[in-house]
Image (tube, rainbow, N blue to C red; front, side, top):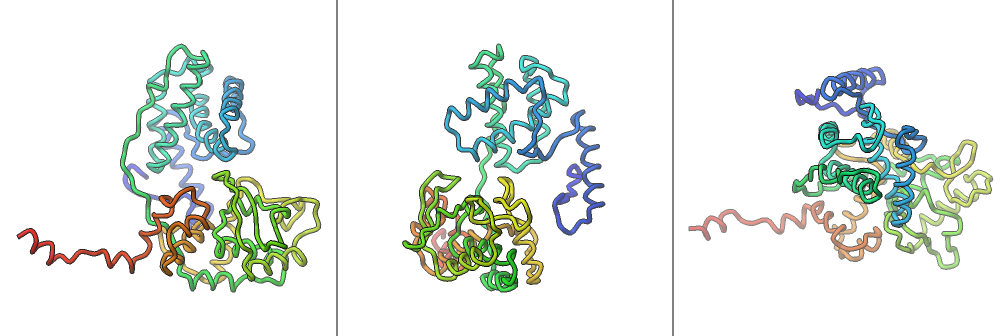
Length: 355
């Protein structure tokens, strides 16, 4: 399908399950025809079974990553990307790391061109680091990292997907706060829409992170490792209190937000809470423009863009979002169309100058 520029969004909600299954089967056949193996497009981080011939070397590499003090999130992402390569080797019946050749690496690289440009660069970097590890530890006689091509391509961050502020309000208003699930979801969404807290940090919030006397929420960001503190706004505070008193299941779990069905524990590591936002956008009848992302992270984008439109300085927005520096926040300048219009150049002035 990709060969004939027939792009099909495998995860599109508009396709029924049987259509998705047919699309997957066509892709599997296409992969086998092109590469001689069936390419795994998704590797579940949890429960991945390491091929026996590579189990020890992968375990040693995990230990190496831990010794280098990679964050847990960074390790999981790195290993997930590496598992694609390991799975490819297993499909090719390669039984030892010394059987890896430049040709094998080249053939593998051909299988990952369906990834986004940024992901491509990251996957190749992960592969290069792993192969260099094998060589420095004496597990291979050749430094195969030199055979991994460099993916040099200039790219610019896309304009962040943002919501219409009225749609955000409509979504929040549709939540039924008369039941435990609604109370939890409402408090969760307020933490994103009002404070811009990342979904991973929301899942990791513990009861001990709530400072009721100081009226603040303190925690260490998973992504940056930086200690941050957020003020508990009135509506956010009351939503959390309502959830704790009338919605949170009785549990010994230290985490703030729990599943509503037994076992009453925190959300899983891989849960992105996408189903929560999808549930209420559908209920509110909100139409998402084609190509726009509408996960919880897009609500962070919306908060930043709204603050920017109101004249909030970038450093203040950067601090609220937990960015290490303002450069990460500057991408939101591209969402403020009214301010960008003031930067427009009058064509007549340019042409007059050239004459």
